[in-house]
Image 1 (cartoon, one colour):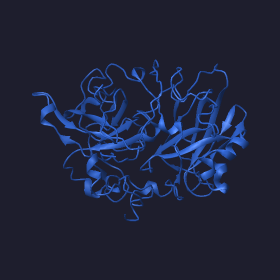
Image 2: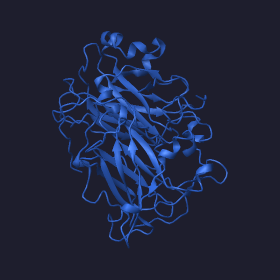
Image 3: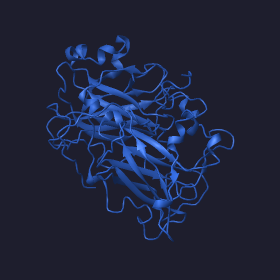
Image 4: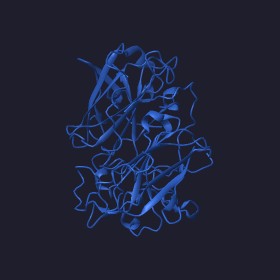
Length: 236
Length: 172
């Protein structure tokens, strides 16, 4: 393997100077290999209490509809053996169709959309499937390098069944012309970065209403131990 | 492994409206027996606070049970502008015969293309720490970075991402 990519897991290296924010934040020492305890082979079970009725539909969380191209984003959550991961929390967040987040730190002079927060949650079904309705996010500039723009993306946060499987990633859209200049996308080796690109999915489009993209997610990490779990629920 | 894992990407700078929730740092209620605050600061390679990190914890309950029994075990706290975070929980019990009490920690941030993983051990368990199968793999001179020190309302555990006193991070 090349020195830049630490192993065959196709994960990005922590030290990736082209992405400037890594320079003072990536650990400089090698990671320490550890024997897994039950702590790492189990994980939180975050249930229905974290998911509201409209959390899966980012276009219905305000009085009106957000502007932008309405899309369905769906797929399956699988473990490393290809088995579906059912009843597992999926968290997503994204910029609006103009490329702006409703966050104080986002200074991109693109309009906010009062009808779009861009935050969603759902649980996978018994077959590991999830589905969101949203609008296609816009690209935005980010000053990492001269005239730097992030390709359009949706952030995903997954838990799976074990601490080892915890994953935060980004879903991209097929054919984005901005990929070549994006150090975050390109931090993942060629042959693996394409797994972060969704596929246009005509079969899930809704005629006269919405386009659709499919994005399957595969969690790495060691196999999980199954505990006698009771789903944790919380009101808020 | 038959299926290729989806690669990690950074959490980015703009997650504070999306991932944290008010109850996230509260693993137990304030009246829970043995409730303590775990507090710390996340700093970078220039020893500056990291104001946009997300700290997550996963642990057993005081009896060493990792799930069930209604114990959530999971904490999530974003860092404040001064890099500080705090999670209210209980000191975990023992999950394995030889193991010292510990809490698994993930740190996410802009500039981290993958999470970094560490463990919190406790300074008031010197004998069990000395025998813990994960801690003994760590360079003795760096073990102190994994040990939370007693504080007025619980324990203090600082996370140094890079440089002097860099926290030990694990490959999981």
